[in-house]
Every structure is written in C-alpha cells, then in structure tokens.
Image 1 (cartoon, chains in turn orange, yellow):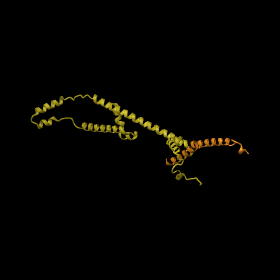
Image 2 (cartoon, one colour; image 1 turned 60 degrees about the vertical axis):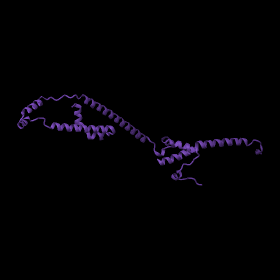
Image 3 (tube, helix red, strand yellow; image 1 turned 45 degrees about the horizontal axis):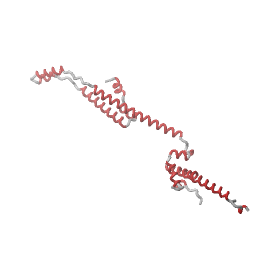
Image 4 (spheres, chains in turn purple, orange; image 1 turned 180 degrees about the vertical axis):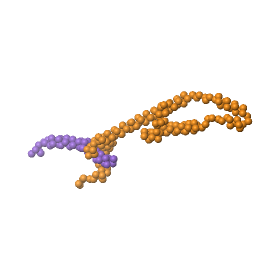
Length: 48
Length: 175
C-alpha cells in the first residue's frame, strides 16, 4: 500500500503548498485588484 | 491729421470693432475709453469751429464814447499771433499709448489663438475618440488616474466591494 510507504505524501504536499502559494499570490495581486478596478471604474463612469 | 488717421476715421466702425473681435478685459476697456476721448474731442472741435471768431469793433465804437480804447484793442487783436505750441510731448504720449495698445492687442491675439488651438485640439480628440462600447478599463484609468490610488487603498485595507455598486448594477449572486 503506497499510503504506508514513508515520505510518499511529501511530494504531494510540497507541490500542493507551492501551488496554493502561487494561486494566493496571483489572486491577491492580479485578479482581485483588477476586479476591484473594474467595479470602481464602472461606478465612477456612472457618476461622471 | 495724418493720412492713417484719416483712413481710420472714415473706415473704422467703433460699434462693431469690440463685438466682432470679441475683445475683453483691458483691451476692450481702453478701446472704449479711447473712443470716448475721440468723440469728446470731435464734438469740441465741431462746436469751436462753428463759432464766429470775428469781433465787430464798429458796434463797440458806436456804443462807447472812448474810442481810443477800442482802437487799442483792435490793433492788439490784429497784431495777435497764436503761440506755437510744442506738441512733441503729447505726440510722444500718444505714441506710448499706441505702443501699449498694440502690445495689449498682441497679447489678446495670442490668448485668442491659444484658445482656438485648444478648442481645435479638443475637437480633434472628440473626433478621434473611440465609441463608448469599445472603451477599456485602462482608458478610463488613464483619463482619471485617481482610480488607481483608490484601488491601491481598497486592496491594502482589504475592501473588495465597491460601495453602492450593487444598488447601481444589481447583484448576480445566487446564494
């Protein structure tokens, strides 16, 4: 059974953590600020 | 009167000049003041030229017994010669006024040309502007850079929702 093989999950955990960190970084610095910018621009244009 | 002023007198329409050139400020007020001075001088000149300058000494001789005084006055009047007046100072003042007026007119012309250029630039911008449905967020941010500052402030403070956005555009959240 592979679950019993020592350090079998280390590889999964490492790449899982790396992926999550990368995703968190991308979402917080690129995706969400751009969405906020779009929403803000829309409401500003209505105000103009 | 010089030939230039004669031409100006015959061809200048004072009433039209301010309205057609669209003059404002100091130029317009000094032009109006100049017109007023010109009108007053013209009126005075006409009034003075219409008056007779001849003195009828014979009437005085018949009315007064002392004709010696009348003779004396007559001789003095006949020998009277007008004093020549040095007008160079006045001319200099007029020239100074003229140069200042020209300077002001040039300034006005420059400002008018600047304004025309600005208006033409805005007209060009309007003509070359993209239609509303092709506008991107970056275009709007470029025109209004304070959006960027607001985004930075909101992201730093963890505010992901724009106030009054849902009231304006509705909410698509199902749950």
